[in-house]
Image 1: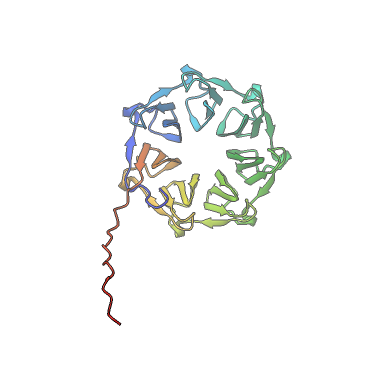
Image 2: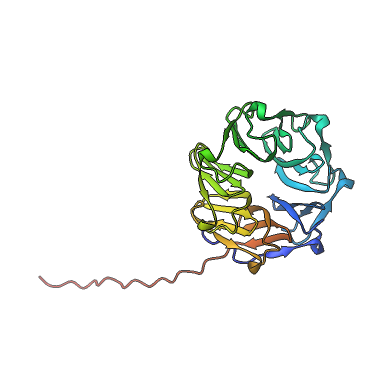
Length: 319
């Protein structure tokens, strides 16, 4: 999709098995599509054509699933009632709460790095080094910009926490944080999502998409002037030069690393222009919208016509 992002989407709704048309998060692992909705976690094993919905009856802490992540066969659901963990493909869940060390039962984001689990909560960033059995909670006392944490991403020993008061970065596995703000180029201190690839960091802010190429030290902010559908960006995902921004005005896609964007809307088949999250897998892009889970295939470029070269003459003149 780096050169040919989708121009059209097919939208899936409750008619296809989703627990709600309000899709808050989406993730794909081993061709299985997981959609976190306001009515449960919907799981599809046929590429998103049909879904089976999981709810509190299956162990989810709450039917509102803000984020989904899969690692090593373990499924994590960030819910409004705790962090729900499944080791059987989503058939059943065990729910973790403040009783297990979470800062709050309202969990808005989840990410894992090996056996370490990071849960973004409304009262801090909760970290587990035993696969989610128990957590230690990090707060502003540890350098977080705010205790309201909306998203988290980890790579190696570096942890990024999207907070209400800035993008907080740890280089020691989450023990301590240094906070980045508008003084470092962020479009706003309200960070709603974060993604990193190498030294490039993408921060979804309530004021644009802020991009850093120096590990989060300084940022350049992209707005509607760069083609974003809205200045309100909820989540971001990147793969190579392709950058996908979930905005309140459509799904904005860049093929040049985030310099400029083209925007997809309901006119392209999205269920709603309010896009909460996005994920790309292979040649398919998945958008979590307020009107369903929208799925688009990357366009296949038309073959380039080539001319047949004229053979060189083999005639030689007589000297």
